[in-house]
Length: 419
Ligand SMILES: CC(=O)N[C@H]1[C@@H](OP(=O)(O)OP(=O)(O)OC[C@H]2O[C@@H](n3ccc(=O)[nH]c3=O)[C@H](O)[C@@H]2O)O[C@H](CO)[C@@H](O)[C@@H]1O
Ligand SMILES: C=C(OP(=O)(O)O)C(=O)O
Image 1 (spheres, rainbow, N blue to C red):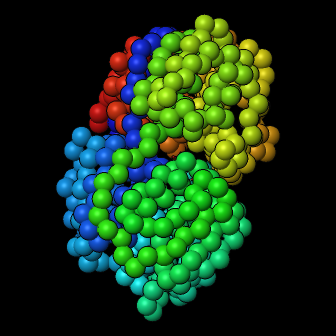
Image 2: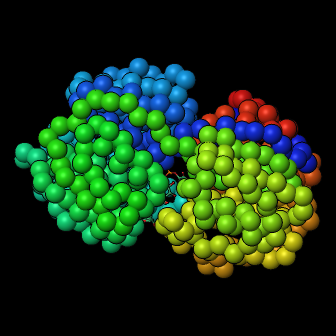
Image 3: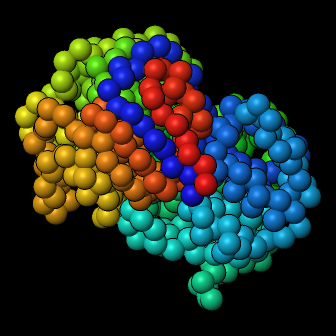
């Protein structure tokens, strides 16, 4: 398993180009299952989860060109299998997004249950309930969601009990091919949901209202081919901005979208960063220790849970105490014990992490437990005095493209040790 060795203490400075968004690329790649003509997708990040998605498409019999320079052409016409197997699904939760398009296109789908994972139980009941409302018969047997429908799925009125990002995406994609009109209420408003809707509309779908809490979908019989560029990764952007502030640096994120980052930019300013934005770039500058912030994670447009761990690392360095409450996932504080190994003073009270900022963290051997927890450890190690060894970085490779090259170009001292 690869490791990072980081010698802390370098201020980050310079420009970094942000990659396409993992959480938009994965739904888009898997929604291509619903298509029938060639689709070219660009600005796709080179990530482990993207490789897994392409492997899954291949397992379904769907031919593709492979990913080159962020571009992949997918030929969904060759679909020949409707089972998403455990070996692939277990490594990537987003595989559940194969369920809606497979069922809508072929009338049949067997997708392994993604199961629990590091950050919480993450059930998929809302995906299943929504598809049932659209006329599917679904059984959960032998660890698989087994779904079928005679003829086409039927348009339905779906009120989601909880805001679910992939739940909304799965149902929206299925409804795009259903017979008649569907309404999804209490839909997720995340920018990645809008990106998926725009992608499907490029292929001839009729989806209205994505980005609001009510999405209206008029089903079409077939999708056509087309090209689409994935939106920039707002979480990768936020992670680099936090690293810039934590190291008292001066960095500019290019090829990003400041409009998707309102809640994060607000907290960066409260933490003392000087932020400048343009149409597609964000510059962060800092010269002082950060100020502590108070954060409550919640669905978009509120503060994203995927930025919680990175701000925890920031609060650990702040001048004074702050707190962060996690309301989306019940087990998303596994970075805390690792940050403590680096000298952080953090108490956990239920779903709230209360920090007393320390003047310096110290390098240590730490272990990644999930994707964003890994990002928080990298940020802490960049600031810490001395050397840190970060283990199990396969978690970070799921979601950050070439993170060590990007950080090195910004002046960090980071090396990947391969094993
Ligand atoms: C690939 C992708 O886009 N992943 C993102 C997506 O995950 P994901 O779509 O899995 O997360 P959800 O939005 O579905 O989860 C939100 C909450 O709803 C609950 N829930 C969800 C579905 C369901 O059927 N029943 C249920 O109870 C979950 O347990 C959780 O408490 O949104 C999360 C919340 O912004 C992000 O952290 C993930 O990075
Ligand atoms: C939790 C995340 O991803 P996933 O839903 O793919 O596990 C994330 O991107 O932070």
